[in-house]
Length: 138
Image 1 (tube, rainbow, N blue to C red):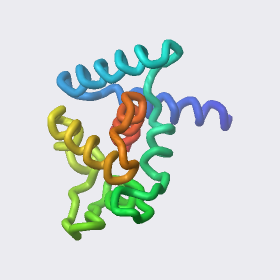
Image 2: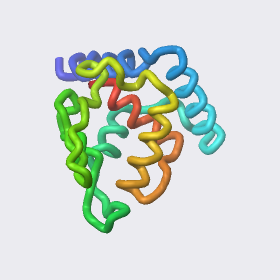
Image 3: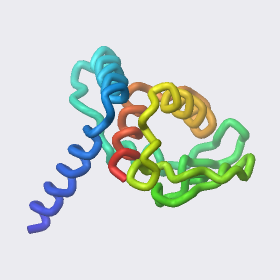
Image 4: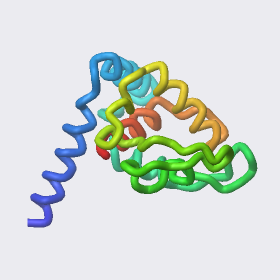
C-alpha cells in the first residue's frame, strides 16, 4: 500500500512539474538539452532533488549561512521576506501565485540572482530544472 501511495505522489509531482506554459516549456527543454550535453545519462529533472537544493543552507555571498527558504520560507504558498531588504515576497508556489513561473525572462533573472546569493555561483542546468520542478509541484 505504501508503495502505491509513493508512486501516485511521485507521479503527481512529475505531471504537475510538466504543466508549464509554452514559453516556459521551451526553456525547460533548453535546460534539458544542456543537461544532456553535460551528462549523457541525464533523463529528466526531479522535484525531490530540487527540494534539497532549495532547502539546503550554504554560506552565501554576504558570508552568512542562507538557503532559499531563508527568504521564501518552507511553505512556498506563503509570503516570504527578503532577508537583506525586508521586502515582502509574494508566494513562490504557482498554486498560490499564478504569475509565478510564467515569464522566462523573470525566471532566468531570479534563478541567476538567487543561486548567486545562496551558492555564490550560477546554477547548472540540472539544478535550475530541479528547482523549477520543485517550485511547480507546490
